[in-house]
Structures are given as C-alpha cells and as structure tokens.
Image (cartoon, rainbow, N blue to C red; front, side, top):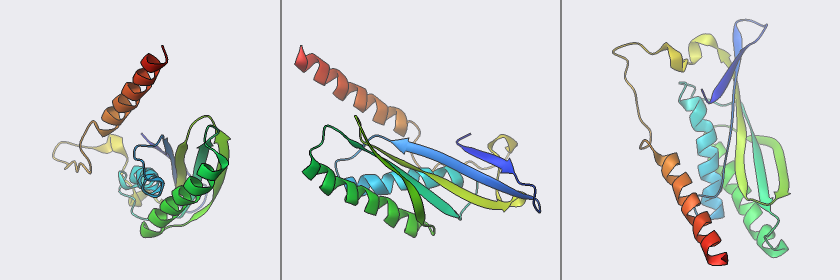
Length: 158
C-alpha cells in the first residue's frame, strides 16, 4: 500500500498520508513538477479519497547543474507542483529543498477523514470494479528507460 492509515484518538478520525518522489521523466521542469504532484495525490485517489488537506513538496536539485540552470529549473518545478496541487483542491504549505547529486521531486500528501471516506486496498471482494487510471507497467517502462540511458553513458565513458 502506498499510503499509511493511522487511526486518531479523536472522533473516529484517521490520518491518511502518502509520500512519493520521482526522477525526471520529461525535459520540461514545469511539467515534471505537475507530474510529480499528480502522482503523489494519486496514492490518495487510489483509496477513494478525493480531497487532500495538505501537501509538502520535496525537491532535490542536482549539484552538477550550474547556478544559472538551478535558478531557471527550480522555480519552474515548484510552480508546476504548486499549480497541480491547486488544481487538485489543496495547497503546498511547506517542504524541503536540497542540493544533491540527482534531481528528484516529490512530496507528502495528508488528509484527516472518517473511516467511511476511504477504501482499504485489501478489502476488495469478487464483483468489485477495478478502475485503471493509467496503463499498467508505466513505472517499469520509465525505470527501464533510465537504466538504458545510464548504461549508454557508461559505455561512452569506456
């Protein structure tokens, strides 16, 4: 399960929270921010939760980028993430930005809700309908592409 469900002590409420992060899948920093945000929120949507109370953004910019590149790419990724969060009916209220060897973007999505407002993935029964929101194997294909790029770079250096 991509989300955690924590029963709270007050009034039958539960805290549902998820975190996810991604390496760049596209060359457009703004679009990558949007994609990352949508993927974080999709973990809640997969549980039938349609409203998110809060989001945090996690951003790692590459130390191999020049300062000029960072100044151009970083605000675009942040804007894409924030715009997608707003379209999803929530807001980014904080997060963390670091310099790292790799570009990584993701976040944390949090909601407090009643137990009848979410569906646990292990509660499916025969006859339930499964709705696929993207083709199966998308992440496997993206990871394979990254490995091919990595392998190509290693071969070129030899």
